[in-house]
Image (cartoon, rainbow, N blue to C red; front, side, top):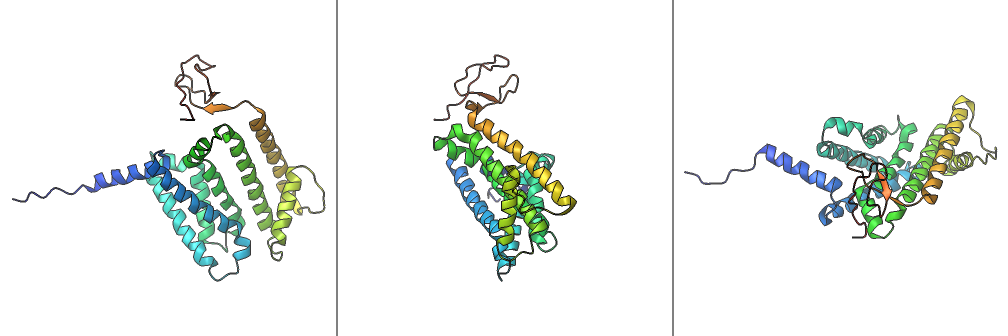
Length: 266
């Protein structure tokens, strides 16, 4: 009679694989952080390719790299879908839809080039990763989390608008002139300087200018608030759910609940 141990069932292997993915996505141990660091380096390389896209478009290997990145992002989406508590939760995440749009622009670069500016939002995903927070804490910059995140949000908005303006109004200009003009217009509009030497034609151009000014000013205010307000830690109160507290708080200021805020320096 055979005494060979039974191999793990497919369901058990699936649970183990899902637990590994969840550990990579949200873990704080050394093994998880190493994986997160590797994935962040790949994300930064992809981001560099996106930023250099206008200069590399005519190269023979552009489409090869483009489709290779598409395969990678599709794999990331599949892994995040498995690691999510439910498929509905996965679909509710903003980065899921951003990555789906990015994937579409990579698979159909000629038809969807007008949406390529969304690729810069990969930087926003990096800034919201667990690894990013751990690096700031270990570098002794935990108190600058809100400021750095506000700066990154502003930069992401700046380059998203620049990308939209470039693809919609300056795409046919030679070399990097079109992108520089789009960046110049965006900065002048966000800062409400309005030199007027570069303007966007038509109704779409006017609406783009209005949205850029309104959202840009809002992000400026948000950045100023992050710089001047007292440093607080993010720790949800178990009683009332208040998210932000003083770093040395013992009780929640809203409900009086005793807090046990971890020491970020440990």
